[in-house]
Amino acid sequence: MSGALMFYGASPKIFEMAKELRNRLTEPEKILWEKLRLSKIDGYRFKAQHPISEFIVDFYCHKAKLIIEIDGGYHNKSEQREYDLNRSNILNEFGLRIIRFKNEDVLNRIDFVIEEIKRNLILNERGPFREQKGARRMMATRVPLL
Image (cartoon, rainbow, N blue to C red; front, side, top):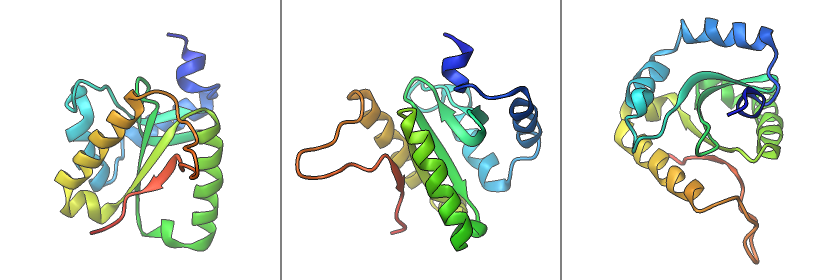
């Protein structure tokens, strides 16, 4: 597998920043990483703080083209929401699906988070994203709180 495909042209500086972030995961990121690492979810391999183009995503599975983001409270600010939307649009152009969870989801509902990840892994196995007749499927999604 070509590094250019897996990292989508990420620069050495982005790789260095990703390494630093891996050394200081937030508590919710640590909890989810324990569930994802070592291919614990149906054999899928995830990478933590993974460089993609000019971005660093919280977790990435190359086989499934799936990004998982864990959002703290600052993601509720309008400027950050706009940045996240633009970032998601760019990552979607690479054919990547993004699912987002709030810190609280990981801290209080980890079983739900894992089931949503599994559901998205299954969706990605069905092939490339296609626009459904009569409806547009958004590739970047926020998992709702119940």
